[in-house]
Image (cartoon, rainbow, N blue to C red; front, side):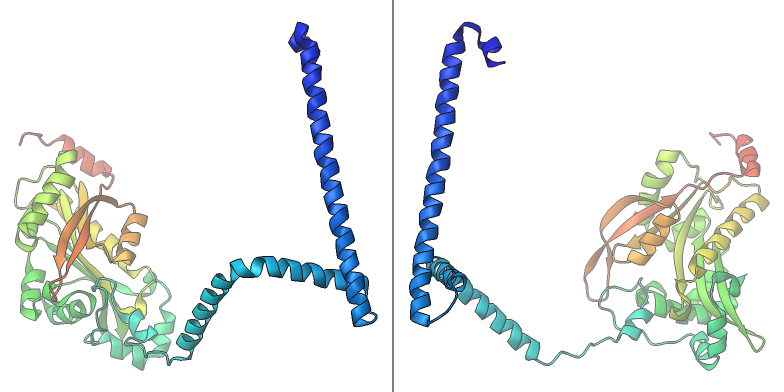
Length: 359
């Protein structure tokens, strides 16, 4: 093949090939000689050591000799590393012997802290009546394995005191000012609030809440102007959603969702939110208004449980808002804006077809 490629230069090709083969053979012979001489030296030293030690095998002596040679050649380079590693081990041993600090929050208390509270928050006191009911009836708690084991109903102004107690467990204190304001909040026509209750001795104790602002008037009253402007720009603008009348229900805003610690991870929050949005759509249909086009919300970035739940439900993260929240200590926290665009029902599509876009 080489001759065919080189043609008239075949002689030069073969000369180079012979030189390369000779060079490789020479290298191989040199390596063999070096290895043979090294082996003989080791065997000689082993024999000397065997005579001095009186009967030790040559193989063992050879191994000792080789080990000494290797250790002698590498000890100078490894001494600094060994010194540093020994110091590090001493420090780790000293740290392991120190007494472990006591946890300021036990694992049980940490599980009871709502994910909506800022990181580092102390466990809030249990104010809601449902905690005492569940402690007094452990069999009742064991029987509640999923969201379908609870009862659901709309909230009204009579639930204001219980809503205030639950809100102080779920959210930062500044979000709900007290029972009186909660009563005004629940009395507003544009507020759609649902509760999950536990039935015991003929009473219904509230264990979870979901509150949605369903009209433009409610959003303007209970949402800051900056947040409302962001909703117009990020949610309504790209989808050309009409939101011009005070009673317009084309956009709903999820104000708050919460469940007591004993009943979390059972799908209660998702069920509350589903019923709340169904109520919003039915109220819009009763009034002959435009159907629900979008559902939006804001959530702090540290509330990982909420963001995972909304993303799993199909909500889309539209914006990251820097410094959206300020806690009681003056620390700022970023927030996310989420939105979900539900598919319209047949009745809603027919109602929208009969409305003028420029109304």
